[in-house]
Image 1: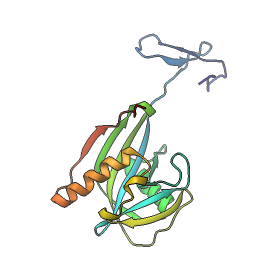
Image 2 (image 1 turned 30 degrees about the horizontal axis):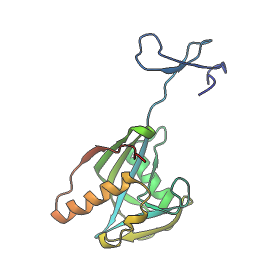
Image 3 (image 1 turned 45 degrees about the vertical axis):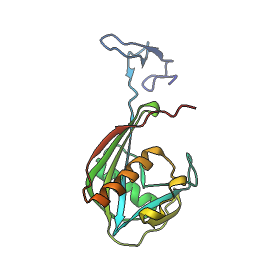
Image 4 (image 1 turned 180 degrees about the horizontal axis):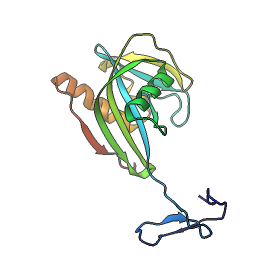
Length: 179
């Protein structure tokens, strides 16, 4: 951040009085500009023993597979956001189920929230952000071409738990990969 969105003055990065973290502060009008993690919402859409995946038509990770998900919008709930993203990316209508996983990704300032969901019908097709959408059984999942670790980990757990007959809730942290 370079300029105050309130008055246009160049901002300073400093710890405001009464705070303990550096923030962008406007020296002219005094506005403190907080920057907080972004929330990504999505779901694991189920149809019988298969799940719906989307092949990304956008960066990052263009051409790789993921569950329908994206950034939550203002004035919507977690469930509304996950349903909207599923409709936008796969033109799929879903009934949201239970919360399945929350993953913290501190190195990119994101929190991912995944729900289980049931496809209401098989009338789906790629949305503007998807090259393709398909149903996959566990043996058909394109594990080597999944877009993100934050999708791979819950999907592996989902199939393991489904085989055991007990799907639970999970919370974890995805650490930055070291090169």
